[in-house]
Every structure is written in structure tokens, then in C-alpha cells.
Length: 206
Image 1 (cartoon, one colour):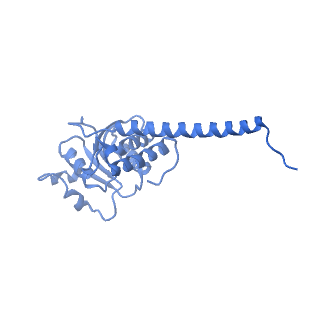
Image 2: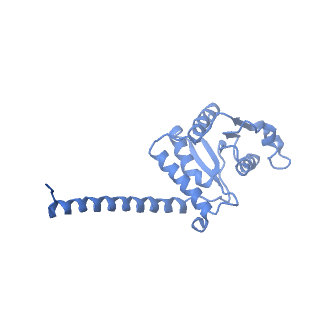
């Protein structure tokens, strides 16, 4: 014997499917809307930054970030510079060679961290370093798209420390017109998803 669904049963199924499609579409729209807000609100390099107790670089592998951190230290923007997440093949001599000309004397005030392998560990190592020196204010140097997530993790580990930032924007990253460059859009989308993941308190590996 065959059984055919009644009109009310069929309409109920279509209503359920329609509701699911509507919810999924709304979720996609919200996801993309907040991505646009995220991308359009990323900081750009400032003209200047106020002095702080210390300067921190996340992560210490990009020459642009290292160069900017060393420059800020040479300008006495902080008492010491902490480079977190240095690769094993990067020696102290390699890094100090990036210092402004004639300012190799700042090597007395540089500390290297080879332990941190992701942003969460960067923040934890920074907390230890800042605690040892009694620092209450820090300048963070990292890529512009990384600033929101880095600040989030630092706030979790050091809620009372005053934070300011120097966002680094490499030449091949076009934050001002990100939508016109597929590479930049992909880069920002990846960081946006990591930021949402971190915001939800879920573990990440980088």
C-alpha cells in the first residue's frame, strides 16, 4: 500500500527547508558583513606612537616587523625590545644587523624568545617578560591584520597593561583597497576566521 503525504505535511516540510535556507543565508550575510567591517577597520601605520615601558614584536620572523621594532627602540620609545617567536636559524647577530645605521648599541636592550609558536604563546611569553621588568605599558609591533587577535590574547593575559600598536603593512598587502586584490582579500579572510575562532575561545595552532 502506498501512502502519499497530505498537503499539510508537504507544506510543513517545505516550510522547514525554507527556514533552514533562510537561516543559512542570514548567517552568510552576517559573516560577510562583519568581515567587511573587520577589513575596513584595520589600523594603518601612525605618524607617531607614545612612549611605553617596553616594545614587543609578534612574531619575530618578518624583517619589516623586526626593522620597525628596532627603529622604535633606537628612538627611545621603550626601555627594552622583546621579539617573540624567533626562528632557531635567526641569531642575535642576524637581528641586530637590521638595526638603524650607527645604533648597534641598542643590542643591550633586546630580548629574544624562541619558545612561542603561535599568538597565544606570544602573549604568554610577553606576560612573563613584562612581569619580570615590571612593565605597565607596551607597544606591539605586528602585521595590521594581526593586531585585533594579538590584542585579544594580550588582554586575556595582561588585562591591566596599557597597549598601543604599530601595525606593519608590507608592500604586497593593499589594506586600503583590499577588495581589489584577491591575495589581500584571501589574507584578511584567513585572519578574520582566526580572530573569530580566538574570540570564541577555541584553541588554535598559529
